[in-house]
Image (cartoon, rainbow, N blue to C red; front, side, top):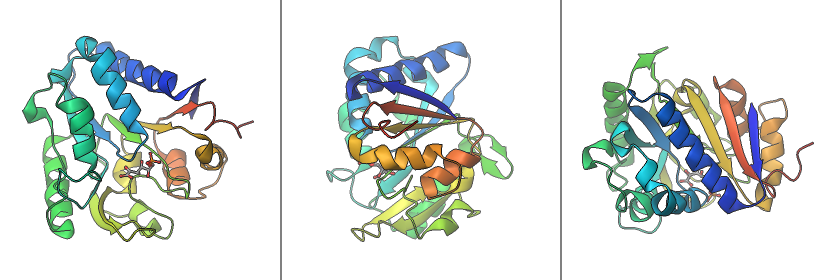
Length: 236
Ligand code: 6PG
């Protein structure tokens, strides 16, 4: 597991954006399938990407997928798609056909099946699971990642690509990328910022599957952590 730690959240957001652009530039012929998380943490990165690095990004080579979605309409302020669209996708010249949203307004169980098929159809498959080039994850203070919460560990070993689930704290329905396609990705990158995340960051870095985020961090092929100093405060 590689750790990259920066003094502030904006520097972390900039560093991760430039890192993604470098990965794209290192393989100029390749189309990248990237699964993005939602929640509040990536908002700064989407903003920085749109406003500072759009002109150096090969948008036509990025296929945008989602790690998870809240089961709301796209115009709802809780929508992960809606947030990324407003801050990034509507601002940059990415072809519309490169964007594959989870339809949060559909019936969750049906949408999980539809989206799983769409991913399987468009991505290479190995170990009977799709292979994303990059899965960008966040982590909650309770140790969840994607929308796999403590108590929902069955989703870590599910044979489905996406499943309908819920946030046990709010009861909100969610659709989540399960554990196996996350650990099957070429690269898993966690973006975690803020002092309230210091404990979960140290759990992820310690040995042991203490929660869903730690589990995927310990089982994935290649893991990178992008942290601000506050989130890294409890690391040795
Ligand atoms: C979501 C996510 C989720 C997120 C963590 C961290 O829809 O909420 O994709 O897994 O990454 O909950 O969220 P914050 O960045 O809001 O703390």
